[in-house]
View 1 (spheres, rainbow, N blue to C red):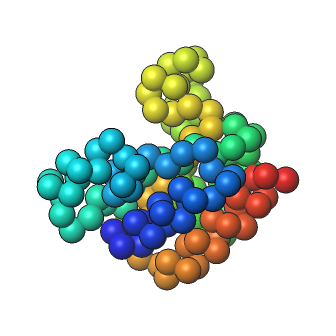
View 2: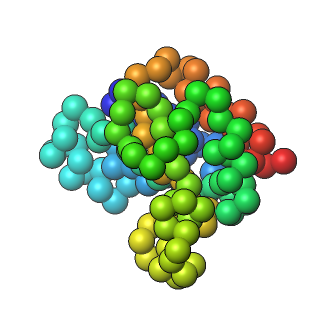
Length: 132
């Protein structure tokens, strides 16, 4: 699943509907060099994505995904997604959400072992729904 996560993070980073991807496996990450030393086989399957369109776009994205499970736990053989600002961190004030890495425009993703083309296709249709 680490190879899947790398491929998905690279795809998301290039997508114009995405503001940012936080993943140590990406060369653009400030943690990339350290990750290559500490985890040379890959930076894991978890990362965050900032979606253009903010809170509402994130909710639409999560609601429209077919392959991903919308759950609070992360790290599984199946792909998972959560929008912390509307779930686990909803009781916090907006500035506290941002400080906790759970800004209104952020989703947390855990990539599973499904076919990477299926994962990307699901995210593509979800981002299209989020942008509409």
